[in-house]
Image 1 (cartoon, rainbow, N blue to C red):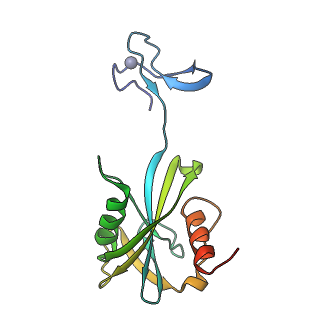
Image 2 (cartoon, rainbow, N blue to C red):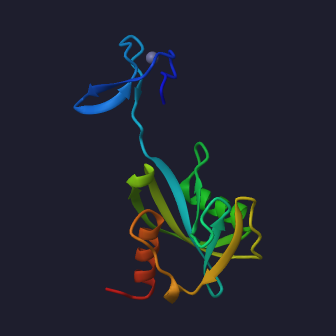
Length: 161
Ligand SMILES: [Zn+2]
């Protein structure tokens, strides 16, 4: 953001309540770009045989992950998880459970992760071009973002201490 969305003046850095923020220099205007994290809903979608990992069309070829989505205005995160499961994979959520909430500072996001038991015939939407079903015991997360939710869920599922 280079210009104030309220009055179109160039944005500058300013010290506000002890934090350096990008803000409008016009004190009458008072706009401050707080750059708050965006919530992202992530779904560990489990079907018979394992967890669905999908490949996004924009990702490196070998990278597969659980599906994610953005909330609509006013939408409950759980409803978002069910809607995205249907939209992205054409699967219907049967049971759902909150896994946890994870900070993802590298993307300025907060991940809200659900386990979704789902059924149906997988049909990918246009954002995805491939998927695989990975048995829970072969599922490995990584050390940030959605990977943290995967690790927590797998550990709980496999009964790790
Ligand atoms: Zn302004």
